[in-house]
Length: 89
Image 1 (cartoon, helix red, strand yellow):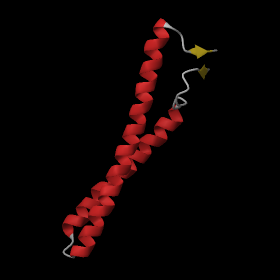
Image 2 (cartoon, helix red, strand yellow):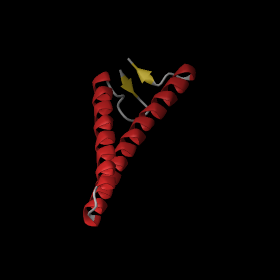
Image 3 (cartoon, rainbow, N blue to C red):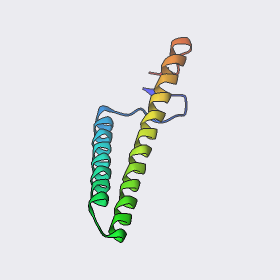
């Protein structure tokens, strides 16, 4: 099936499973870094751990935004497809 909308290629089940794993890894890494930042007494180490935690949080947010773009595109295709088909078989 080809999409004529010029948008992104739809995600497969394997893509979604991998993205779920990546999101879990990023969330766990952020939680651990925040935890270690709050546990350490060394100011330099604390700052480094907070920076690491924030980077993992940004990575997670980017993954979520990417998924949202796919959801929005799929919704647009579904809505427009009901009125005017956008797929070619």
